Amino acid sequence: MNEILTAKPSGDAAAKTPRIAYLTRLADAADSEPLWNPQAPDRPDLVVLTLSVWDEISDRLEDAQDAQYLTRGEPAPYTVPIDVVQAMLDGVHPIRAWRKHKGFRAATDLAKAAGISGSYLLEIEKGAKPGSISAYAKIASALDLPIDALVDLDD
Image (cartoon, rainbow, N blue to C red):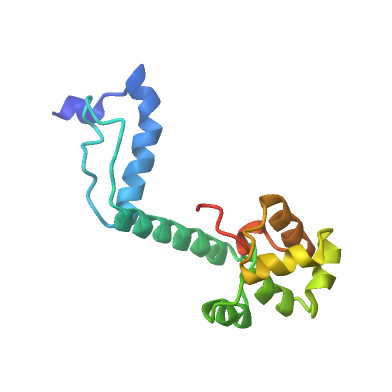
């Protein structure tokens, strides 16, 4: 057993080592034991997690990333003001919440700054149209925000 723990992987096993190390860190982040032995030569190429475990891992990794910004003294990429958070919790579309926070009183003003039509922006804000990634990118740029502040790209 000791030789398995100290042996350096080669060939296929060497290629899998970074992936296994990453998956082990994910399991550690979720405070759970991995369902595989990362040192075993026949370790799986596939790991199945429940959605709740994956969500927990994702949340903890996001928290760790936020903590890194704080410990380094660096500003986070962007912060979400409480008025924007409250508006979104009240069901306001993120574009509308950010638009109002950034001082664009009329949707047409933001639309003009983004280079899209005002009616299209209003349809996105009302939920009548989903909006294209291109439109979201233009809107995010006009609001000086990353696109993921307006839309969840993981969906």
